[in-house]
Length: 372
Image (cartoon, rainbow, N blue to C red; front, top):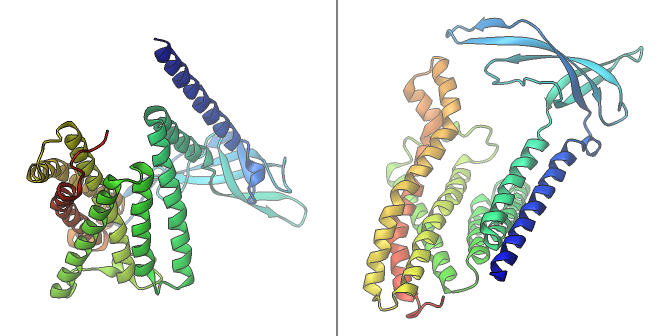
């Protein structure tokens, strides 16, 4: 009874600490203008004009509204100065921003000959929303998963740092070693993530071997298909704003995407098989292999659908823009969706191949008696 009460007190204390830290972070981002180099204005009042209807040659209708934003500058040499900024926003919000009272926005200050100041709205200050979402994710991980949640967040943070370093290294080499850089990064990603989440044990090694093997097989199959089809239907020109060879960059992007999907499935299958072996140590290698295939067949469908839905959500806005501006379905698909479909198919191949691979490795290299 005392142990239960102590555990509840620890949980309550953790809730209070997480809530206090989140409140301080949100309050801090609302008062951190001095940390920015660009001028920031806080809107104190808004005067809104009448909305005007606009229609283009393809009968797309939008409404634009002008607003006068009055506020004061929060940082820099013009701190404390009061300004009025004119802003125009559309109902669609495609290329502009609607500001409200209390909004903080980056501005460009113009100083005229007679000392008069005017300004132009540049963009909204969004760090409060970003910090709030980050705090919410980390807080839920700590409160629900506790130490496991902390290790999961730590793996994401470290992988983010490694990914940033890889991008910087790729930029310094002008993209000449992009596949080597991100191929090595994929191995480090998988090893680091599994080590932090699972621990340094046999289960981690089997999961790592399955992840790397399934990912490698999916890329090999894709390269073979590209070779025999001469890459017909691959619209590399649809990769916008690419300043280096698009094909290696596409393969590196596909490699990382397939790695995440295969790692997710491999972790689920192998952890389930280890738990099953722990409960029923009398199971033979053949029975473990068949159980792994059954688990994989259950996971495989939803996971492939998740990848497809993520892909559709990513391409949907631009595809709608293409269609609303008179482009055909074929051209819209080629320029927006074709490369994403190929990536989804390659990841799907990796997901399918990971099922027998995970089942085989777990059945052959699992201990006869799994420790709890």
